[in-house]
Image (cartoon, rainbow, N blue to C red; front, side, top):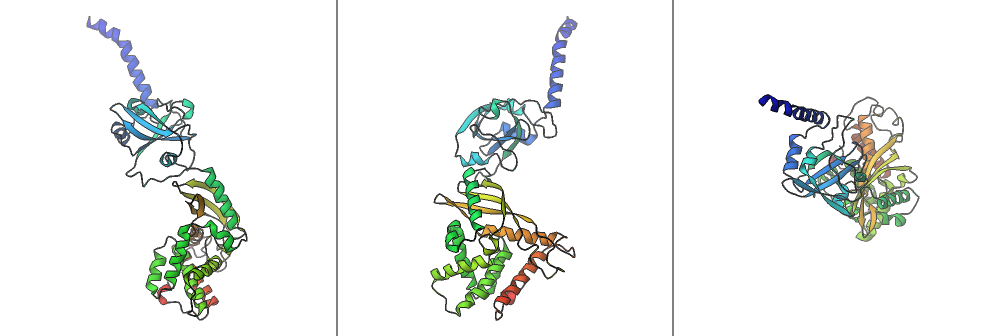
Length: 384
C-alpha cells in the first residue's frame, strides 16, 4: 500500500522538482536587503522596474498590507533611458498619477538578473506602463529623506528656454539687454562681491575666495574689483546703486563665466537639460575652451598646445514664471579647464599633476591686474 502511494505521488514530486529547478535557473532570488524592503515596506521606498534592462520605470511605495504593496507612479509614463532618473516626475508630482496594488509574492518572483541577457517575463503588471506587459524588479531603493532626494526630469519648456538664454549670451548684446537673463541670486552675489572687495581685511577676502565653489573664478573677479575697478574712483565711490550698475559693466569684461565679453561668439552645445526641482534646473554644456590654447602659464614652455571642448554644468532658477541663469554656476567653465591643465600631461608639459593649473592661473591673474594698474599693491595674503 505504501509503495502504491509513492508510485502515485512520484509524477507530482518530479514535476515540482523540475519547476523549482527551472525557476532557480532563470529568476535570481532577491537579496536579503530587497526581501526586507518587500516584507517591511516604507514610504521612502522607490522601485525601479524594467522589462529589458534598458527602459526603466519608477514607482513609489504608497501603502501596504501583509501580502501586498500599493505602488504610485506616473500614468502612461514612457520610461527613461540614460542619465534621467526614475524618481524625478514622481517627486515633482506635476502629472497624472496611478496607484496600483501588487502582491508581494509577485514582486519577489520578478527579480531582474543584471548578469544575464535572458530574463523571463516578470509577474508585476502596472497598468498604463510598458503597454500593460509584465515587468521585472530592477532595483529597490530606500532613501533616508525624501527632501534630500535628487530630481532629474526632462522638460521641453526648460530645454527651449535654456537654448534661448545661451544664444543671447553668445550674441554681442549690451548689459542692459541681457541683465534680465540672470537670476536674483546672481544680483545678490554682486552685492556680496562689492562688499568683500571694499573691505580692508585681506583675511576676509581670502576666506571668501577659498570657501567658494569655484575659488579661482572668485579670485580673478575680486582682485580686478579690489585693485583695478575700485581704485579708478580715487576714493570717491558713488552711491551703491550707481556703483553696482557700473560694476556689472566691468564684470562682463573680466568674468571667467558665461555672462562676459569673452563668451560672445562661442559655439555652445547643449547636451542634456534636467529639472532638478519644481523651480530649479541644470544643463550639461559643451563649449570650446578660452584658456587652453589661448593662455601661457608660467610652468609651460609655450601656450597650452591645443584648444579643446570643455564640458561643464550650469544651474537655472525659475522666478516669477521665467527661467534665469545662475552666474556663479557658470564658473564651472573655468574650473573644468584648470582641471584639464593640472591633470592632463598633454597640457602640462612636465607631467606634474595636482593644482598647477589653479596656482598658475592665480599668478596669471595677478600679472594681468598689475598690467591694468601698475600702482596696485596686492596684499601678501592674496599671493598664494
